[in-house]
Image (cartoon, rainbow, N blue to C red; front, side):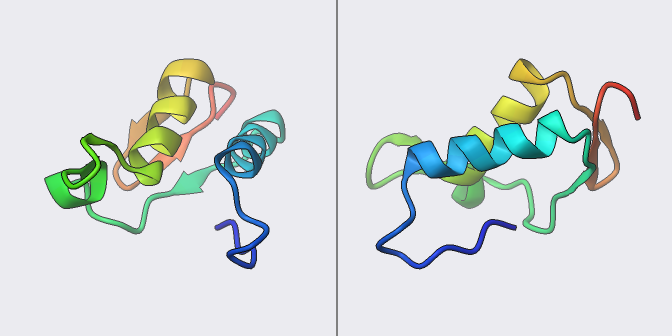
Length: 75
């Protein structure tokens, strides 16, 4: 979990954090439910940051689902 003060958080910082998780081959436990509210920001008409993270891990870095955990390609 990335824990930065609000004034230090940015989508670029979050993307770098996701990349660092993938670069280190870490497992990613997904504590939040996979539901519409967690994956789509209806007010803004776009995916949520959570959905973006999941997409990056699966599509960009090759992670695979194993229950509530995303496993790296080497896992």
